[in-house]
Amino acid sequence: MSDAAVMESETRIVKDATCTFCGCVCDDMELTVEGHTITKAKNACVLGKAWFLNHHIEEHAVATIDGKPATLEEGVERAAQILANARYPIVYGLSDTTCEAQRVAVSIADRVGACVDTTTSVCHGPSGMAFQGVGEVTCTLGEVKNRADLVIFWGGNPAESHPRHWTRYSLMPKGLFVPNGRKGRTAVLVDVRKSKSAAAADIFWQIKPRKDFEVLWALRALVKGVEVDPAIEQETGISLAQMQDLVQRMKSCKFGIIFFGMGLSMTRGKHMNVEAALSLARDLNDYTRFYAKPVRGHGNVTGADNVVAWQTGYPFGVSLGRGYPRFNPGEFTTSDTLARGEADAAMIIASDPAGNFSQPAREHLKKIPYIALDPHESETTRGATVHFCTATYGINTPGTVYRMDDVPIPLRPAFDSPFPSDETVLRAIEKRVRELLQERITN
Amino acid sequence: MDDIFILIPGRTSRQGTALNEGKLKADFIEETQTLFICPDDMARRGFVDGERVRVRSEFGQVELTCKTAKAGELPPGLLFLPYGDPSSRLMGGETHCTGMPDSKGMDVTIEKIL
Image (cartoon, rainbow over all chains, first blue to last red):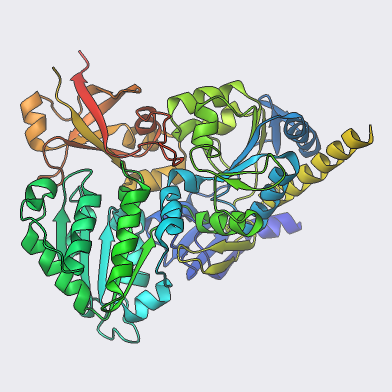
């Protein structure tokens, strides 16, 4: 029997594997692997099970150029030519690949003078701006598990977007200083919609849409002893008595935290909404320990922030066009460089802007040559000049990812893929770009 | 003049699981084309479950299937749509110097597709 046949027939257990579907990055998976299929994913949530059990090695060329099958080398050559010949290239995506691949992508952007940006800019980018504006009182999810007795979720629906956040980190587990687990914690949910998460909260506030800032600012005022007009209820849907009650709970808890979602960062006000939440947490440290953390979506979006920041000093929306990094959300972020028709080439790694960007941005992307690295077919890969079909991080490739609390987690892949990793493809592109740029100098 | 509704795109369990099956597959497309409307607004506008409606924003329009939200989930005037291609087509390109288009809390109108 050949090695491949043995591989196909054997059943293996991979312990302590890591799920990279969402920012929880749960690293306690026990995977049952039969050949090139994962048949069981013990400990995974409903989203994690879908992530693992739907993973198949697809029939696809390793590269396509203008929709036609090509070799890896041909794809690398065309990709390098596109990047080296562009005047305003952009590198975008990066939140669903390893830190090792992200590092190479930033290096390519540096060489060709590109704007490097990640999906952070269309998720918690405004939160990144708010961190710079007012700071972040931060902690790990381990500290939350072991210490938090007041847990507030604001503008999110963790029951559906991060199902294990509650059970593994924030609400249910018994911790060192919270020995009774859920009974020892008060859970608060603030949202415009009574989502499935509301049933698990002790206190649910259904606030009026676009009034997050007003509610957070009123809470800040109450924490500081400033009088608040009872008419706040007509404005926000939350009564002054409700606010006073929550402020009392916040001041008297031992360890409180606000986990905020994209209800704050995607709604009008954006970074100002998040600044209000961060400022509230900061103010509460006059009375107790209080923290605020964004709930991050993609498996390594936090790693993307970290890697881009290591390399450039800024977390996203960075232009390297002048040979040194410049940070300016709204100018160098991908939504903007595409919607304004500025970018003349793009490299998109593990992301689908053609399927989730605004119409003007999508229209411009269709007009320029671009490279896409993605294990799966999407609107973006369909329109790509060069598409590399790559191995899936975490399932097929090792590496490092960052959990939403900035804790690095190693990946333990389940089985090999016939496709190269993002890092392998990016290293080949970087090498060829370097050669092309050198030839230009020499000639 | 048409009612102005506020549209909140967001995640659902089905949107998340269907995403793993493939963004171009039927489950994901169906989930991300399902518009949740509160019972009062459904009755007031004469919509019935499964009916196709056209949703317009300042920046685009999409055709969706309407579904009654659970009682109490949405206040009148608020709509929910699972994230996907249709919700993004209603966004504008302006990011107000943040890099982030207004992706939640969009003003929209709805009309029946006759």
